[in-house]
Length: 427
Length: 78
Image (cartoon, rainbow over all chains, first blue to last red):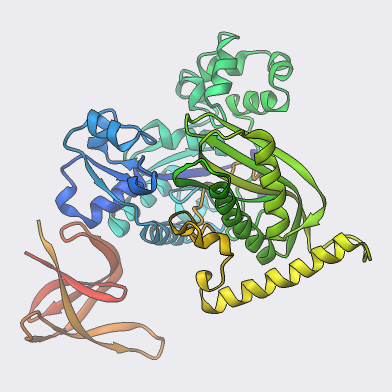
């Protein structure tokens, strides 16, 4: 794929890339308000289940936003900010369907459509503008179609690179088009706060603060060497983003990115205090990760655990396995050892398990070492268990330990796997 | 604000697999023939709250919208 902001068209004419970023506004909340017309004039928030301790705001409509409610606020805080708030549960099946319908619309204009979560997509219209009109015209058509066909609104950013297109879709909301060109980005983009730029989070903001960088313009005008010295290659990346020099291509629809890690995490319905409770949760996660690895035909050699304590402090620890595996039992053992080495009885709120260092298929030489033979036997056993589960349901065959605490072992992380936005860097 | 009225539908499938409604059965059992389908497109129903394939139909000389929200059919009630 060619990585440049200009393409050479017929007769050697330089074409500037035309990239759109479409962001469906307040996505979950807008879909819920469409299906519940009686709620449209009230402040609405889509919230997780408080019984499962997932009770935070996932999305809110404009009226709720006006009361100062933010995504991630606990429900009690959101209600404090807005006493008349209506909380509704999420309906992921419906959001997935909507996301699919929106992609079908985009697919009528270009084959280069790259998702960034359920509600956001980049579209590359370079070379298609003679068919559909300019980027701005297509953006307006898309907004109208999304409003009429899906009943929700979208903001569209039009630019010559992905980063500015995304900034454009955030620039004016709801239901608006913003065009950022090489001619106007100094006026439009540079005065924005640095945190509005992709990949500038809280930690980066603090670091930039030390150099007196408050706006994207400040960042763009900082000498590149200073940023590189402070933040390495990420500093260079941010400097390029701020100067409109992002050349990342928009992926083709259906293009699969290489999988670099497989992981699952969960917030337990209550704090995990006893070792047995941690074991149950880790087994659930290990089995889910193992099953997904097997599905991809992969093995991994690095196990990483994420431990979040009841006081919301967290740590991540990882270690290498003696040989790559996809066995749940091996993953569990290593993850539990990491937990024991790093936790000393503190109550845990969330646990995560991730496997990286992935290899396609089983690797390693045939061996007569007893531990390798044992690993192979475990693999055969776990594959058989999975076949049974596939036929008769996930709970048809369980470890005994799961029966000790049905409240904890009830979840099925594999099937309840939540889709997060794919990283911009595909890593 | 309207509400969804789910209706029974008799549909015809043409050889290409396109689904075309030919009659609707109202809540009280009355059946109305669809004289003509004027337009078929994806659309949201802001009045009743829903989204699906919208059929703009002529029924007894009047234009009516009929939605197919897989697997049910609905019209906008008053």
